[in-house]
Amino acid sequence: MASIEKIVLVLSGGADSSTLAYLTKSQGHDIYPISFNYGQIASKETNSAEIIAKNLGTTAKVIDVSTLKQIFGGSTVLMDKSMAMPAQFESKVIVPFRNAIFLSIAVAYAITIGAKKIIYGAHKSDSPFYPDCRKEFVDAFQDAAKLGTDEDITIENPFYNFSKADIIRKGTTLKVPYEITWSCYLEEEQHCGACESCNNRKNAFKEAQISDPTKYST
Amino acid sequence: MASIEKIVLVLSGGADSSTLAYLTKSQGHDIYPISFNYGQIASKETNSAEIIAKNLGTTAKVIDVSTLKQIFGGSTVLMDKSMAMPAQFESKVIVPFRNAIFLSIAVAYAITIGAKKIIYGAHKSDSPFYPDCRKEFVDAFQDAAKLGTDEDITIENPFYNFSKADIIRKGTTLKVPYEITWSCYLEEEQHCGACESCNNRKNAFKEAQISDPTKYST
Image (cartoon, rainbow over the protein chains, first blue to last red):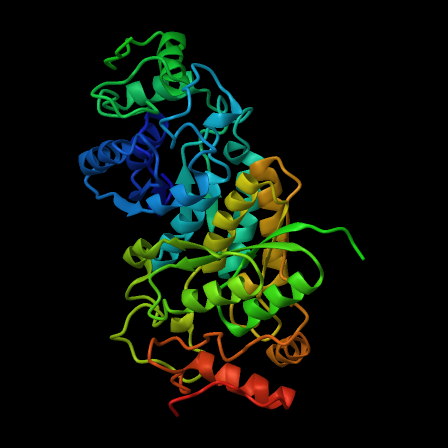
């Protein structure tokens, strides 16, 4: 087994990053989850992140940067309740450069705690739609992080070659409690079952042929 | 003259970024300043940024991400009043990867307002000490920004080949009101005159052989 590393993990509390947390922990590493309230409607996802972190014997650092709504509000349906929520991908579900903002802060966190690696859950099913989920971006951002800190920082999206269904399959073997994770763009009692993110989640379980424990409104 | 561009400018309210604001405006561009309260002791620098922006006929977007103190507090003297303030550069004046955090948010802001260029005031006198002020970092971050947004984003630090004294010389020809700008790491009535940043400011005016309008306590 490779040596134990101290790893900062961007943990949204969704299915992908929660699976990555379980996987990384199962590999014996010390994980330092970091979660963001960035003004998203579904801010309860950070509660899921906190429970997932606790289950893994650690604590999620939850950072409130919800003032970013000053920038993003009105441009993305994830933050603006007055915009119609699409069932499939449309550009208005993109929060531009969000992962770079999260990774920048995660790098700063890593430096302050003496960690050298940062990971996040971006995967193959997202990369056609979200530029900041692509491996080319991650590699370029890693270069910038090395140069911008003078440290030998590694940034990875270990699921870059996993579809969302592959992730669900992997997580099921790791006993990830998916019923705790939160994917919905809305903030209702249970997953709406109709937004792009709920549909992606439903489809991933279906494709993986694994029973979906999520309670959906529709 | 080159065509007029819409440019997001990271404006701290210090001498360097304020000079860059005046220079860019003098070139005829439309500037969109963005300033950050990131938990720094000297949060009044954002007031300077607001006045500089107003003088130039625009408004600074001031974003409060002071919750970042949860990460940086205790690691940098710029945020922790209990640490002794050095008169010269020491690593504890570094806020790790700060410029990447600011630039990431600035890129997001640029995308939402349809700007393609982001600039900031990092210069040659800073680059030996601060990795995220170096041109290599800026170039790498620009690559990451292009890949992470699918947009032809440009990120520049136009003063990369200017010393701080060169900046003061340039700004004086542009009538930058340096008495309004704020460089001090502390938050007293006037500049302390003793911290690294005050000393850099004093020395730059001295080297440029320009009368320093700043009121220092010592």
